[in-house]
Length: 144
Image 1 (cartoon, rainbow, N blue to C red):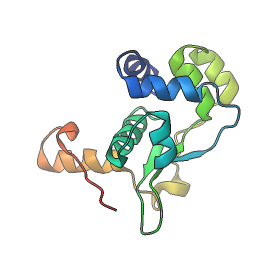
Image 2: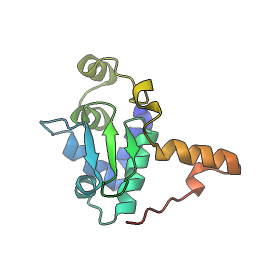
Image 3: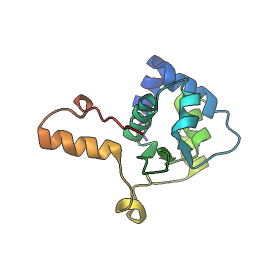
Image 4: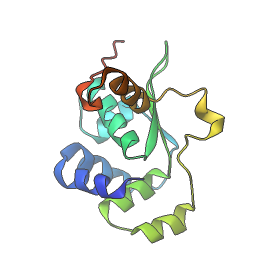
């Protein structure tokens, strides 16, 4: 996980602060989070905002974004226990404590998910490389 960038975002971005402050106190660690729940935590009101937040968390290697299919809701699959992510970003635990508590968990980009998961972040990077532009210049709109 890119802890330095996550902590920088926590300092300057309200949605990140709201999210981290809430999840750091979670007693139960869900392995996934749907868009609607994420919207509540970041105090957002549009799905695009939640998708952008999920993309940000994926770029920090905190999780993997899964875009919706018919009759399904987009969600993020966390790479680590969500409360531990919150505590680490917030500074309640340091990197060593984090590793002690969660172990050496690799990002969930493992071979078991490699061919079946769609990564918005990776697709934007791939498209940006093809177009020879920065990935932040690409905006993806999802219509329901």
